[in-house]
Length: 422
Image (cartoon, rainbow, N blue to C red; front, top):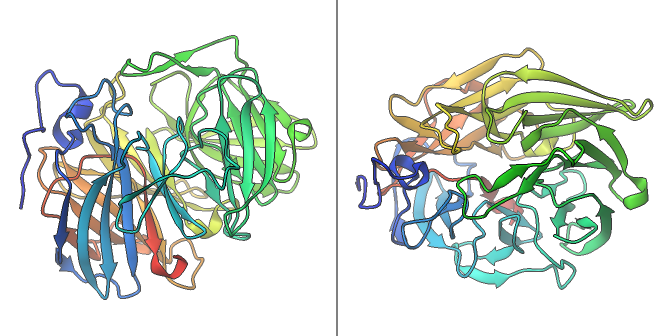
């Protein structure tokens, strides 16, 4: 098994070029991985994760680099292959989705890039010409309609455009939304009838900076609530306390209110905490409360409850946070948002678990009736493992661990892509 490679630098290197974050220099394909435990027979598909990986080995910031996909193929109780591939000709380095039979690599500053099931680049995808610019890296797939909901941002007014594609991938609704500036809107939310947009006082800054964002007190902090088939004139704007939101947990409707759980911070690059915001559609007022004070990020819920009431969230706690956005420890946690309980899985000293992906058991929509799949990295740059946990017994020993023959850099967002939905 491969240990830290030549790119695992230390000392004065920026955090994103050292240790568990350091880029790798080669593409590879490895077959029939060693497995400890037993991979459930129902897990038939591919886990794919995206993340920045500069070809040169250097980049000015973690997010400012070419994207690389890492995938592990599971079928018949075996880990059939691991492969990694650069996404050719683009910085689509943030996330990956599959909708209407297409797998797309995403970054919010550029159009999507279509890739194959073997992680090879096909090319830019624009929904048959319907998408005229970049696309958010966090689109939402509605589990009830199969629709894909997403948005695009631009430097000129109206700055924001909302899109809805049907289950076949055809754009059936497009609505320009007039907002005062092109803000850092990294994520958004959906409910059964609405979409929520975060227009907050964080703007894009110097792309060469380690933190390419800037605060602007002249931009009011507001969250817009729009019917899923609505337009600019239908947006209800709610004033909220100035903040930045990194990621959405989920949102749902509760009578005349909309409830949003999200990862929020009071300023740029300050430690985030999990908050609940409630928007009263009758009174036009918003309320906010803290659900958990820890720096919990990369939140995920069961795919069947996206846009509906949820109880569980699977998150990554970022520890030893630095002003440049770096962190040196992570903890995987399962949250109960009704009781406040937060269960951690202990991967041992030196482990850095990444984002959790929720893989439902076939035919089940129960939030705990699923597996949790994630890469577990090592702070010393040793080889990575793909770990499978039972969602209902989150703290118990892993169901299975597939040992990769190499190191995967700590990255961003991944997805479980089951064959049944291909």
